Length: 473
Image (cartoon, rainbow, N blue to C red):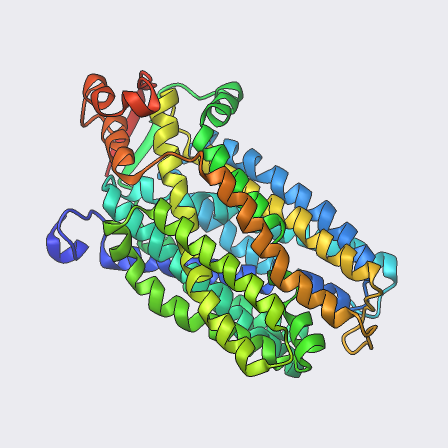
């Protein structure tokens, strides 16, 4: 590939491919911000009780968590003629568009039973469509390029655009929903998200299609996950942290009942976006100089401290509140960008340690823990609100103590979750320089002996690699 096409020496992907990859994350997370984050608010606005919403969330999110590893195994098994991951992305886009529209067709005038059944089935359909793109998109760079730095840059910027997508949805949705309603908002967001996801489907090229010469069995895949301790440690820590992160589910409630104006939810999201845009642009360069693990730890500590400060400051001084939200967003934004760049590292370690390369399984573990968080944290938040007498209905009058309960849920539990996660992360030992060596061994660039000379003291001996068929395009 020429330098002019790729834009950077040593890069195999073109500028348009990388831009398409980032834009896919943008659109995907507009969908996520539209449905996954706001589903409980939508359900309560159409008259489903908080207790019923908790049950719906529990059922749908548990299925959500279970179907990810299943799909990861399917992705590793099914062989399309061209490509391993792009065909799945092409299947997923029309599915997620259709299921999003059906989701917001839920009739507010229907019976309580009809609404509960519709909400449950519509979300399951939407979630399965979302999973069809969520698993492949994170491991697609392993097929697009064999350049580790290039992969890291693609994933880091992908997460940057993902956060922009979520925050952009969070900025626009509260103000638009109050003016045009849920169904119209669903149509507008669906059209915008699909439009920006399209370029990748036509521009991306899988150059390095790695397949085992013999099909990897389900038993081997389970072995891969159970023996990849760093994959489990990292995502268990992420699960514990996310388990108590109620704020993403109740931001519109915070604006309505604490600040007294739903448009404040748009303001809070906008405030969060500004530092994200600033910090996100510098993160790839920062990660080149500072191991991302250390950066991730520092940002987590700072985010937890600001959560505690916010709780004690309270929500009566809105100006001060906005300032603190801005400062906290510097660190939470950086965290959310860095977070999923750990998966390729765990994948390289898993291949080095077991000899088997299972990108779909590694990515599905990531999405499993991410979605398992929602299967528990969302219902917990709604159960707590129901226990304090939360009333369903878009303009319903709430008990006086609800505002303080919402504020507590929004600030303190996330800080506590981070504190517990940091204890677990002390056992995560993978570092960037070591992963580079693992990747070179896994790609056949260095011998087993050369890899073990550098890594055996920390990670044990390298496994004999399962023979792979590598197709270079």
